Structure formats: structure tokens, C-alpha cells
Image (tube, rainbow, N blue to C red):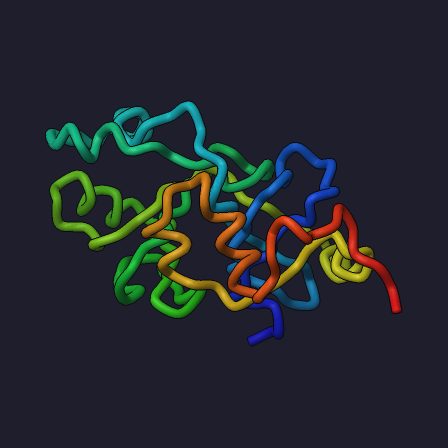
Length: 184
């Protein structure tokens, strides 16, 4: 496991890329070839019902059907990722943080629609991707803070509180955070 896997990447206040402004991205994979993460605080205009209808799955539970889908990142916005609690027991799953797994297979969506899915989940379309060495360069340029991922931030907090809570988990007062970090 790389030193950045199972971490949140927290965009510094000066981040100008609109895909990541005040963003919190769960880093799912990081190796010599690059990195892949899912942004957890960018609600999209889509609902779970919209996505399920697109792939031919019916959902009769209105409260589930109206759940907001997230913009996971600007890369391949047609691909779906389910971040969820519990074990990675689905066809295409892996653990990506303490109490957090990611699944990309249809079986989890079918289970969710039937009310038999994981207790907590977040569906995201697209992902954030970095080529070899790109994320490390951005980290050296102080574009990101990083901290161990926490399931309660992903699943339990309202979306508008996730960035500030992730920053606070570092012991930093969000009001004192400067737009860009310095170099010693």
C-alpha cells in the first residue's frame, strides 16, 4: 500500500480548478503509474433513480431513488463507483479506507435497489485521476493536504460540512488556513 492510499486529499483554499475547489477526494489507488480518487463532496444533478433507469434497474423505494449522485471527478463521468460501508463482498470491490470499500460492479446497484445493499453508500460518477508523478508534484506545490480517510465524513456528514471536517481532522482551524502553503 502506498503512503497516500486510504487518505483524503483536501484541496487547499487557493485551488483554482473548479473540479476540486474546496474538494475532498478519497484516494482509492496510488502507485508508480499514477493515482485514482473519488471526490465525496460534489453533488451532481442526477439522482440514484436516474442512474438506475439508465442501466435498466428498477427502484421502488422513493427515499432511495431520490438520493443524490455525486461527481466523483472529471475523468470518465460515465463510469460509476459506489463507496460503501461493510466488507468488499461484491463482484468488483476493494477496501479503500477504514470502514470504506469501493465497488464498480452492477450487483451492488441491484442490491441497493432491492433494499439489500450496504447500510451506507455514496454513488459517484467519474473519478479524479493523476498520471505518474503528477499527484506528488501537486503535493509538493501545496495544492493538497492529506489525512487518513474517515468513514463518518464520507457517509454521515452533510455534504456542505465534509471539507471543513476533513481539514479539522488534521487539527487545523479552517478559518486560519491560507490559500496556499509555504515552503520551509
